[in-house]
Image (cartoon, rainbow over all chains, first blue to last red; front, top):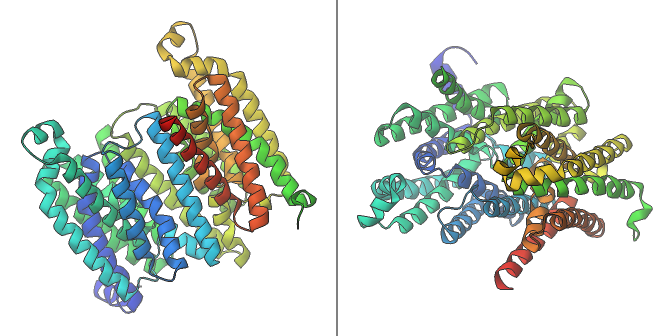
Length: 276
Length: 270
């Protein structure tokens, strides 16, 4: 690595796996940044956490039956989002019974993921990759699938954005004005499931917050205007992903650590600045 | 192969596991009562980073787990404060803590032999069948001490958890008690990491008390049930794992989850 930017970018792009990681990472950052804004606005960061952990056995099951992990992630996250949507839009870490239920489901799904890995006789590294992300192993097909998922999810998000903001800020008035609040909430959960499923490819199931929540937490603190906040959130997500992948590539430091740290710094700076 | 108790590592697992599960069941009961389930999640993440950080700097893993969990519990306790927006803050901070653990994991595994590559999996998913003699002793004693203190403060803690205002008016030292309880939770998480792993502490600390609360609303019976279910699940996990040659942690989570689903169904339809 040198300090010549052009040479560095050429180095970064010389291997096919890195081209794939950067392509997938860009798509992930676009969707995670946009969907993340609504996650923070709606106070659903906990659901994002839950969806990603339910994705872990999905990825492991997919490896077990010899398909791409992203297929399993999409299936498990989609089903979980549907279940949450039907169980009730207010599910979260609120009441005692809810947090007990959610905690029990989380433990079981992670245990199930461990079982699938053992059945496959996968290596420890395989488990780490799904839990903490990797820059290796994103295939051409994964990139295509990620592109399709991101395109569909972003289109859906653009379509429901206005009623979703309305319904998130003031559900009662929105309902009175004829916004189908419940349908919009379920549609968003499905978009969130898609976002989580593709984000796991880069940062793993346990570090999902770094791309899905931290950038938008910063953005919503800086501006109250939705369009600006979404743009800002996407921008931070993109910067964190690109820089994170580049640093991980040049230094051999695990991508999960780099990305979480890069995402954490602006959040921390903002909190400290606000506290003064 | 047919008798689990003929093997020393199985006897060790039963002894340490029973002590840890007893403590987890009792402390977990108050965890649900006080609606602090997600403190455990944060502490589990801390345990992962703490244990690998200890290994990187060359001190004992147990010291790292207990030290980091207790330190973070004290920090959570002194910052206090509840409310909205907090889940974003907690989630972001602990995602980074976990990220730091990933760094430690890679530092530790790249400097050592290939065998150390699985240490992260042991911390995340438990290693009760691989406990060394010293870990068995420490785990068992820590479990029993935690259990004893939990039972000792159980009465005022119950009072404080169920009706904080009246309890404070009656002179229950609310802040001190809440702090002691957080330290107990931290110790229990650190112990449970050995049994079922940092990611699966819910299986011993949350699901058994949740089942107990579905079965009985009487607190003392509930506490006993919760401890009994945690121990039973751990035993079942050990025996099933012995005969099926699959991870103990999976069976523990599966057994408690099945019990939880059954207790929910019973509550709704009976």
